[in-house]
Image 1 (tube, one colour):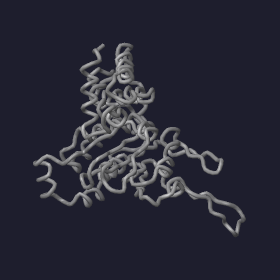
Image 2 (cartoon, helix red, strand yellow):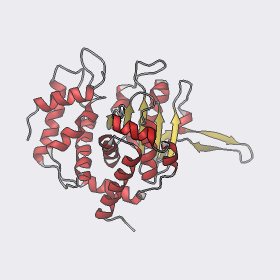
Image 3 (cartoon, helix red, strand yellow):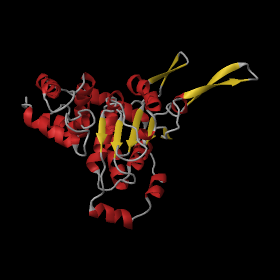
Image 4 (cartoon, rainbow, N blue to C red):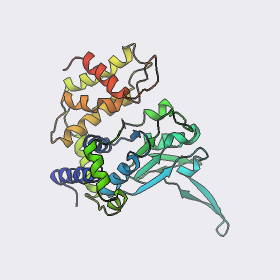
Amino acid sequence: MSATPSRASDAMQAVLTAANSLILGKPREIRLSLTCLLARGHLLIEDLPGVGKTTLSQVLAKLLGLAFQRVQFTSDMLPADIIGVSVFERDRGVFRFHPGPVFSQVVLADEINRATPKTQSALLEAMEERQVTVEGETRLLPEPFFVIATQNPTHQIGTFPLPESQLDRFLLRLRLGYPDPAAERALLAGEDRRSLLNALTPSCQPEDLRAAQALVRGVHASAALIEYVQSIAAFTRAAPDWQSGLSPRAALGLLMAARAWAWLEGRDHVLPEDVQTVLPGIVGHRLRAVDESREVGAGETAATRIIESVALP
């Protein structure tokens, strides 16, 4: 039985409510994470260890009823550890492919920037084309397919910077940050988060998620709104502030993320405010300042500059 629009909407609101009961004090970040998934994008969470990056990804996978695999990235990891490998079966005299953890609906690439660029690149085809090619054979990935990657700040020992081609495949980048005092007090006084996580049950079914993603694609964006997104991309390419501007893939992602945010807000059309809301997460990892690397708060700084400079439709 296919999910109705109202059922899909109710299911996503239930996911938000349940996630906020476990991840305290981060309603905006949780909503942006779900926005990313509804837009069929991938999510990059960059922050210090211990602020809940891994927990957030596990909560989303469990509440959405999706198959989940966690990959702990290390400097000695090989691409085959992610994609899989063919093993010769002596009794049958043939090679049999053993799928790696990438063949899951939600893949948590934990501390992705602790792996070498060669290993990081194993996810490029999977994230863009939702398939992997191994030994000349192309294998499709599950549907839906969602990569959540966490990375530690690049100044920490033992990290490798993600190449631009990898960064551009992440629709949104978020920072969780420290909890506010009230949330941290509730966290310290409450039940262990791990126990609560283990007790979680799905708030929706995969068909509800697929229905919601289809509804998001149908959210109306007017010609003027599309021109606004195009103007934002054009401004970043012409402005002297950044080494390079937003790619066409980034512009498409910005529009789709704005559609998803609007749908979660209960609207069937996109407003400029939706674009502005998701903009920091879109540009923070894509726009590198001419005179400095991706500094803390780069997304908010770049988004503010863009919003102030590009006229509203």
